[in-house]
Length: 251
Image 1: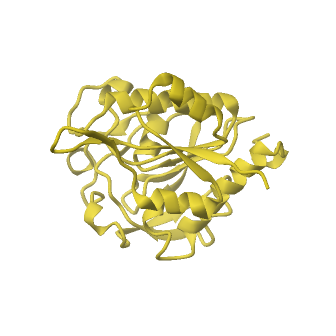
Image 2: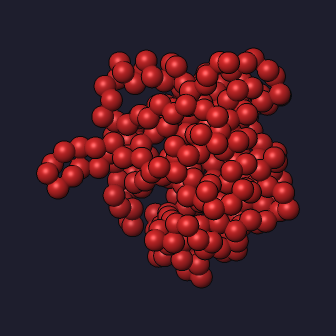
């Protein structure tokens, strides 16, 4: 049986001893097991030649959570953004455009969805607590295993196999969010305060590409619903494109 690989991006952290480490939450690896894909973990610590070899072997891309996207990416100065990594931004934007050019599926999670939006021409709220409706605290990173707020789902196409009844309850661990949505993205889910929670890239001829603002990898072992189906759908898309089957490409 053929094996399929997905490139999974990861942040870099520096230890107290001054050593750089590539760090990836275990949930992403569980997500890859659920999807039936083998992960190729990539970070800005990889040299360009190694990164090219690894990504050439990948049939899908997962953009993970982590630092804020630098506001200069969307023509702004930092005004609430924090913990930025321009090096990671550069690497992930390059990988994203390569994936879109090769027409391989992309799953963008939390920061990943924000980066997808910015790379395609959108902008972000740099700090939801100060420049958006403060009725919901979206930065509940300590409650990663719990439900923070409901999500309304409507008009989904690529994510049609993921959501069953137009609503889901999810965690929330971010202090930024989509402000101006990129023209090539379609919103399909919203928090009660109106913040966009999921998007689809529907450009004709593109492979399955979608993003969610919450962290599905943190609840895979706690339920068998939306979050598990999200990774399963991504895996199906990767196998469909890699096998040359048409249904996973938009017409």
